[in-house]
Length: 294
Image 1 (cartoon, rainbow, N blue to C red):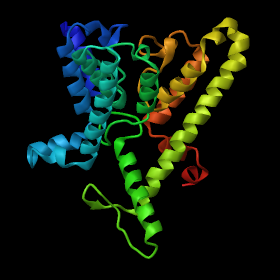
Image 2: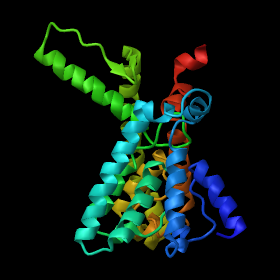
Image 3: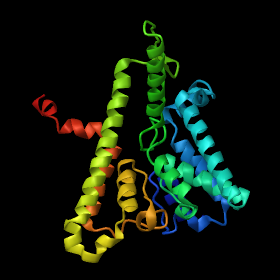
């Protein structure tokens, strides 16, 4: 990379901001796979809890791998990358090329960095669906990544397994543990509350977004409404709340941008990005009567 390009990408990579100074994003470096692999490594590093790096330096070098959240994220990424890579190879893609671009784009989405090395919406319907689901995952808590964070899925798994055991053994007591510690009930409740508010706000945001374009924008912008299909509206709401960066489809997909959207739509996306970045519950609390009475 040129020096300016390297500085820009390094800053937005560690911050998982995803800003690139080229319209092609990392597609400008398709002929340099070593850059894509290096970027994948640093996006992954930015998705891990930063406090673990300090612990690895001061205490033990294996502190990072001993963290259950980190292992869960790496296992999840590895499984997804292998499955999608094998699918691309079976469809006739070059094995190394398929592995390179699948690895880069999967880590980019899960870390909420939002870079793109290719327009993966052209890879097939499976990849459109898979990357839409990956939009909701996110990296680790304590990192710069957005999304729902992998630890919430892990705690939900622990709570679900505990509930299933309780249904089988009604008189049993099964303490819940996560990352080597006793899992308190208030933590589980907090995760459940976050899931509820996340998807409630996502669907509310999507329907309001779609309804807005169907009425006011349809009258104000006329034919511009024809460009906003359901995939654009749905993925736009998802990528805003999850802080990923780009959505799906021809307009806001990895090969597009949000420039053509009307200004009111951009205001709605700003609200979604702010709510997602502050993890929703923080903003919701600001609008409760109890908070202001205190």
